[in-house]
Length: 414
Ligand code: ATP
Ligand code: MG
Image (cartoon, rainbow, N blue to C red):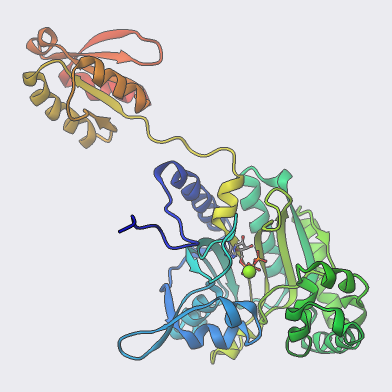
């Protein structure tokens, strides 16, 4: 029988990688806290309805990418492909609509049946934020500024650009849709198969096509802003003004649309050129109709999600693993004492490791490998005096320290 492999598109996050991974999540959480967002965690699976109803019947996620199954009780369930729908569901079923405005941060795994490649997995992780209850573009400004500061804190400011567009309100969208379809119909036979299908059901998505032929056709399509209502235009102007005040740089991209059906007004993506076609690291927009569409009270919302794996590939400075103190006994009697000392250090909050076996030389090697900042050497003579030797691994200097003073002495190594 062949050895078992991880499922295609899934990966183990090994100890060396997980430091980067957690770093990305921690920076997102800390930056979100600066902006007043509180953490929420929702289940990894939901009733299929939660996604089918909200993401739109025509989005790629719903039509091709969902992991849907029937459980033993006959319920139709789906592993969450994204978390806005889940958080909106929690917002409604948890009665959070009494607490507006509400700012929420989340992190966790998402699942999409996609063709795996670099930066595109079937199980991946996102961090994200949602802001409910504010119809004013100030909310969009805050959410985008948060994304910008998050990426800047990760050291990625010079490697990403923020692209911004507006889809307008419902009326603008309807008017634009008509113009776009009228234009695209003339090219029908030259569009990719996917886009031909989208032409009637979800024509805006064609603007986002990665297909070369589609892109050439789309380049000549009418722009959104010609179809904008005055209200929608005012909203977008206020957003741009707010971003300038907040010190967020952006590039207008009139062709930018998002894959999911529920967006209106603001859409944005932070994109890097360093990851090829998988260059979008953080993306979001406004979704005013979503909560109502799910059966909740009409509630405006705006948010984003960022791909943790893509960001972890970009970050250059990951935190170092904890550097322990290595406790090294010289004999069997020393090993018994070593266990006591190791525990004393750990209970005092000092990371310590004794290894499990081996002679002095082998244990010194292991201490090096662990990156130990200090070693505690348990020689017979010192132990008989109630003391040990502490060696500073950076300088090589060694000194005798009474066991009662060991915790204080080691604390000085920071
Ligand atoms: P793409 O155009 O790359 O397919 P998307 O529009 O489907 O992205 P969103 O649903 O907006 O992506 O998700 C937000 C972010 O989550 C993306 O910008 C990306 O960083 C990350 N992401 C999305 N799908 C995947 C995946 N399959 N594997 C890894 N990261 C992903
Ligand atoms: Mg996608």
